[in-house]
Length: 392
Image (cartoon, rainbow, N blue to C red; front, top):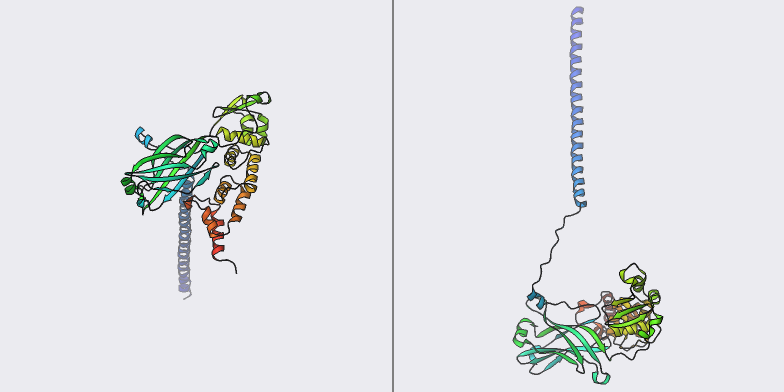
């Protein structure tokens, strides 16, 4: 028995060893599988991260943009549409004429008067069978003051077919001792009713550029002509008028002239420089104010402001604002318009302070509410809410 037991014992030990080895192999295999699974997961994650990184790289790459080349316009389309200049003494009259169909020959309708550059203007339409006439009307007393205006303007109607303004005419005229210019037969009445009339209303615009004014301003208070040549070092030419001035004096008051006279430009060394986009009378009054003269009045204020803003001249802008704050009799609507156009914060605050009723709010609103300066809209809304729901 003992020998058998001794023989059985080694066999059992070998079986136990075999089982142990198999378990170890299985365990190692299981662990290896876990490692492989982890590696696979890691690779998958790395691939995912790489894909995300590639997407980010693609987003950061400069995009290829295909430029759109505008088509050349033919001569016929060029004649149909002409862009009015927007620099200088420019403004737009716009009005919605109501119940136009009720007009009988030769009845007229007028838009509200608007002041621009010291003079009141308006649109008038007239039924001249079988046509519609439209006119630019200047309300200045030309016979008394011998005023005249060289004006360039275009007439536009809002089309019901295209929803856009359709240009009808563009002219250059001299308004001299006559306060109306336009056409008695601009468009056939039937065409106007078909293409431009909406619920009996006609939306009309006249875009105006004043090229030259005569007889509107008072006599000059200071000379800048050739008599000042020995006291000047540069000549500025505006509409063929020559102004003899000192470079350093203008440069001290205007960053524009500082760059022009003292910068590295071709014009910096010239003894005669031409300025464009302004009226020589406005430039004359601008220089007068810059040199200490009292040249600002109801007629000159807007023109001087335009030049001072163009040439970034704080001294002249401040003097114009002082006049508007203290002396001007312009309408509240006009004053508010000037304050936003030329960034006159003191004047804007004063104008808003004068709005105390719904009627005041209506009086400053433009014909097209979308043309209201965005900085004014919140203030008018607050005032409107306060008027409709006053504090208890």
